[in-house]
Image 1 (tube, rainbow, N blue to C red):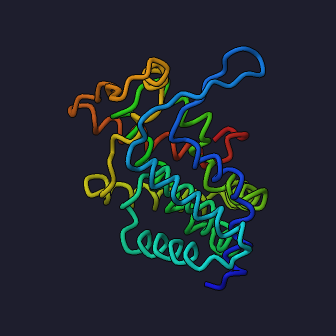
Image 2: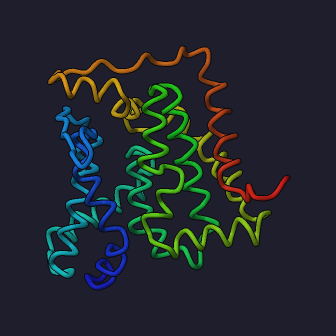
Length: 248
């Protein structure tokens, strides 16, 4: 990968990923126009996510001349390709949005949608098991989880996804179905911390405001309900990545 190529890919995703680097602490709105920073101990995946964002920033700031940052990027991408479930689905959405969608979206959107659907299913499955309602709302609304990989890559990424879904609905459905099969295969074999959604939500924000170092995690969903949660995640993702403007 050339330095110039790396810079071109990352310019589109820079702003959103720079924000990710700051997400180790939560922020709450106080009075109008006032932002109150809430210090919360980051989870390991959030530290990794911040490091990725900093790598992106370093590549951009140096116009692709920061060899150390380029080496870190290459290591991250190599690790993702060798162990696709070694990072949380949220991290995967960042990486796909910064690299793979800008690089391959125009010619390989169907395959990308399959992998992104798999991450979306596994991520929502995690959120249903280990998050709470407020955390899930934050993941969907603030992080734009389901659209994230496409939105980070800029207008082209969203447009390419839209074209596939609206103009080639059968191919899009096939891609998402393949993603569901990938998610099923990896469901019990992921290498990341499945409780990552516990980093979101009102409870964690309150802990940060109170200065509590060790926030209790939301109560996990009983294991006898995990199969139903997985099916719910599959159904939600299939519904999301289709043309919902039409009655099917």
